[in-house]
Amino acid sequence: MMDAIFVAQVKGYKNAKSIPLEDMKSLLSKDNSLNLSHSKWFRNLAEGNILIKEQVYKLSRTENKREFIYENGVAVNTRAFNILYSKRIKSIT
Image 1 (cartoon, rainbow, N blue to C red):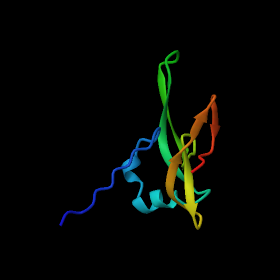
Image 2 (cartoon, rainbow, N blue to C red):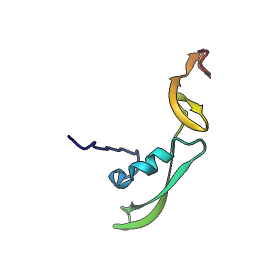
Image 3 (cartoon, one colour):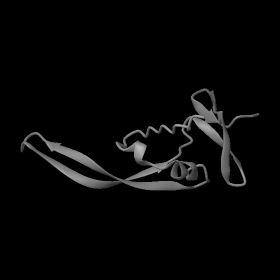
């Protein structure tokens, strides 16, 4: 029997593999987010230096492209938004 493999990619966050599956599952709850810490590089070409700072990365789900369907406060499915004359409207189904 093979063990399941969990692969995560998070835009703008370098260490997505370090996020536990249970933490990712917690994002399915309505209005929930994760605060993660990561090192961010700031380059100053004029001064010729690089500054590395620890910053907080807030990870949350968004409804920019799809609408979440909730049951008991937990996302169980999604559906696409209908686009009509450059306006986003909720699905009729």
